[in-house]
Amino acid sequence: MNKTILVTGANGQLGNAVRASVSGRRDCIFHFTDVDTLDLCDAVQLSAFVEANRVSHILNCAAYTAVDRAEDDAEACMRINRDAVQCLGMIAGARGIRVIHLSTDYVFDGRSVRPYREDDATNPQSVYGASKLAGEEALLAACPDAVIIRTAWLYSEYGKNFFRTMLRLGSERRTVDVVSDQIGTPTYAGDLAGAMLAIVDSPAFVPGIYHYSNEGACSWYDFAAAIMKRAGLDCLVMPVATCEYPTRAVRPAYSVLCKDKIRQTYGMEIPGWEAGLEKAVRRIQSPNCEP
Image (tube, rainbow, N blue to C red; front, side):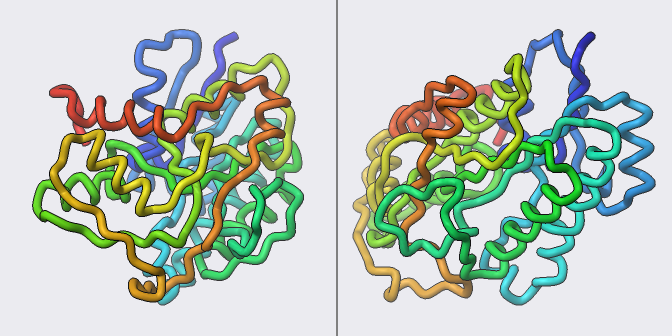
């Protein structure tokens, strides 16, 4: 029997990456939805949708991700990142639907000196981080058999993200300032989409919290310089300190995630961040790319 998979947040960068990853697959039925077609806070609508379509899996890519705006828009942020996830979890839990939900490194405070493990203490420093942690807790309370994947520094050829911003600035300017004292791992959405689908396809669905990013670590400055080089842009990247580039929300100074658990449980091979960047540049420069 074919799996029937609901992908929420389908118009975001991860949802689009999932859509691209499953193009041509005939072994599963995919339903791609966004807020304009399915309100995850509307229990009646969501319940009717999963019943009518006999949904077996949900890939929850929907999220409020405007980190700075969330500081002044906490109610909307919590509605999407906590309340909608709770509603989804209650419906999925009652029907035995397998859920894969995306969370973030922002649940941590960024003060670690080694890669974060899944059982490390959480301590979000922003409204966004607090809302994502609340979503994790609400989902596990309603649907204990869910899989939660925390990721970091997500980018793709779709939508608004650091990668696309650097490509734009690199084509417009001779220099660009980028913070050099925040350390993490750029995560290509195409690779993350592949990891989610590998869990769907796995013969064993093992619930729990997992970490997934590309391998390696760098600063935002390093990432920006690599983008310019890979894209062939003649733009000089200048390192600056976080204190020179104030933002409304606090960013974790250290966001490297330990991937041992997901690698061992699901037998995943995780590409390095440079390999992910090469794929992103190649795809965005393709004449068939529709960002």
